[in-house]
Image 1: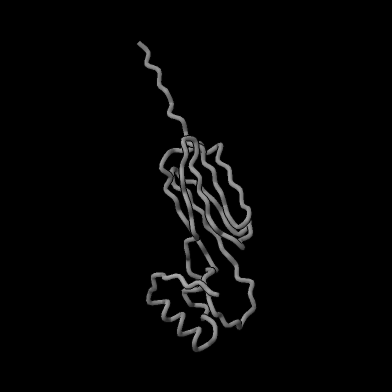
Image 2: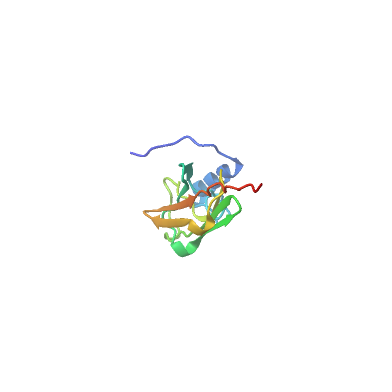
Length: 139
């Protein structure tokens, strides 16, 4: 049984459908392959941490990068399609090509203590929050 999920469509979706119906596969210029997409991303915070989790299954660790600029976390990379050429899709939901997601962090973080792990198709980044600095007032 195949689950069908409703989703928003755009003008390029019709082009991709026509390519699949006519040629059996999307052309390389299709919106299905090669366009920049945003992987599913969760971000939450606790009293001590901000945690960001990104689903990038099938991507080698060497094919993505994580950077932190001020309070913006950026994850970008490429999911390579290693499947056979000339295949005919019956359902196509896994995006290939370049991806990028940006998360604006709700608080300042201690950049020296940030850690990340990539396992089971998920990239989990833990960003410890900076503690407010107490300023002593001299009389």
